[in-house]
Image (tube, rainbow over all chains, first blue to last red; front, side):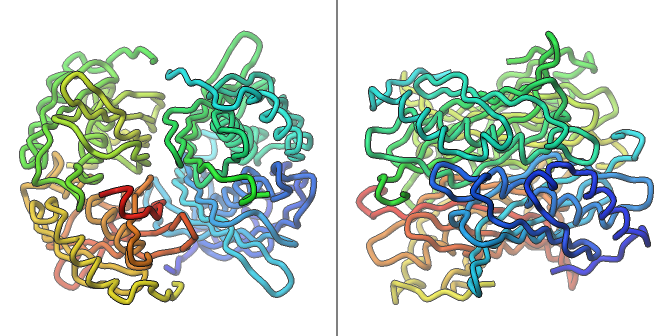
Length: 149
Length: 149
Length: 149
Length: 149
């Protein structure tokens, strides 16, 4: 995986402050665990209240943490005064959303001037077992703060 | 848009019964409004508890209703005794998740023997205004019920 | 489908001049047939020299015309002095690449300030039959000419 | 990257024989260089006859080798008597198609009973420089030979 230099020395603070404003993360009980330059982890316990028809975690909820992990991985490399906008993503659902808890690992693959491409992998953890649940590939655009807020 | 013949005369009942088991829909307050052969609508009121950092509906929640609308559009065309499994989807976020409520319209594009391809469009409604918020393209696989439940 | 106003009155000329510079189109024998604001058609005869292992037109060649149809649909709406850059696309292969000739219909779905989202549908034509071969969803960025040339 | 056991001891032979039937590879001058279980490399020299309007290798040609690398990576893990069908893929174009030659590295990410998910990375090589040109995520279905030939 590529290593990146943050352009904002306060990258961890701005990522954590922004994450704290995502009310959906409180609603689903997700936590931002790791923030490194170009890499972010979000953890989510399984809940029987967030499932599809077979009791598996719903793909949309898996996507919620995968998308935010990708977006904050990109955001961690932004200069001060810039924000990110997710333009699109593609998700492959590799195995059912089963586990005690889930970890979404967001990673920057390519950091361009305007466009950042990220990948997120979501794993379902069950005791000492770990299953690859989803893989997301996202396109994220750098925007000046004034444009989005 | 193509017109489809349902292979299960009880398609609306099985779709509605399955949707009622998606606990995430209760958690986010989404409703299954329309069920036709190859076409499904899901409605979701805006909630300040399901947002990203700028107060817009989170892309993962938009995806949750778009994904289920696509999946149930495919499911509405399955023969009795068969289920659907979403393999993957791609979502373009066309404008911020703003509106009083959101409608996801899932539509079958191509119904094959094993693979069904669907499109979902999500619109944000604000008074009499309607904005195209997201477009999802999904690949869904037909599976025998015994395989998934 | 949405209707669009071109911002460059010479849109058809600039699209056709740019297409003429795509040497790959000569190599595969593709022709730009229709250019309207936000809509483009590219036609390609079947060739036994462009196939995969079963004699069907290779998915990469189907993508070549689908991608260019999407890109030129977006380009047709650009102001003078701007160019387009395809950031990403997703293609569903709906049926085998069979037919006497293929038509890729590229259509702008959403025209934003920086980002344009397009869809292309590719049909295989065989006598009076027409088969939906592929559906592409693409994200295209507007860039100033100096940036790309 | 995951390691895989081939289920067909003749995997390299069947992959190379199938590749030899892809006439498009002759047309664009691509070569199958490496075949390992779950991993394939395809090499393509730059040609001024396969470009888009700025002289860069056309995204559709980049996709042609990326798609086949993914498909053959999946095929290398199939049991004897089975074939593969690419259902869909998504490609991010990370930098312009510049280089003396291009290498597409196809890798199986998840090998399921019916569905295999692969990733391909395409690099442009220029002297001793190597640039990440494209990343493809593909969904591939296992089918019995009788179904496709």
